[in-house]
Amino acid sequence: MDERTCELMFSSESDEHETPDWLFDSLNEEFGFTLDACATAANAKLPNYISPERDGLLQYWEKSTFVNPPYSKAEKPCKPNCKKKRCQKRGWHRKKRKPGCIDWVRKAYWEARAGMRVVMLLPARTDTKYFHRYIWDKKRCQPRPGVEVRFLEGRLKFKNCKDAAPFPSMIVIFNPWRRSWQF
Image (cartoon, rainbow, N blue to C red; front, side, top):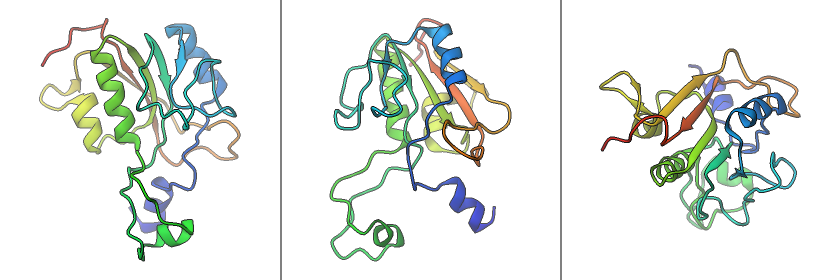
């Protein structure tokens, strides 16, 4: 993969990728969501949502939760004299850890273990640690018990975006009622 493609695929210019209405409506019809756990007032799909100010990673989720999390990697705090390009581009130094996609997948996994059904829209990055730790059982070559994966055909065009995403997407369903959890 060349440098430009890598930059584009893992860009964190904006973590807000609004779910297309047709996709959300289809999933909501199937699962009957009661909470949008990672939304802003501008892109919330349900009246009951958790905004970044309330931090969805610290809240309890409901029986049927939808999550379209930030797709970026987690970032550690910057040092005061940081010379990294992304820190200089931001124009400021992050004082605390910024959660990433892995944090949301981990939270969904544990919420499902507590009996909540969580449906996530995620980039289909099957080479990541979180995919193999929480979603895929590589020994059995299938999703982990209680997890369902649906790969979306083609590239998803997020709402209010001119072009399709530069990465494939997947729906991951953490559903404790479909299969028993194994430890």
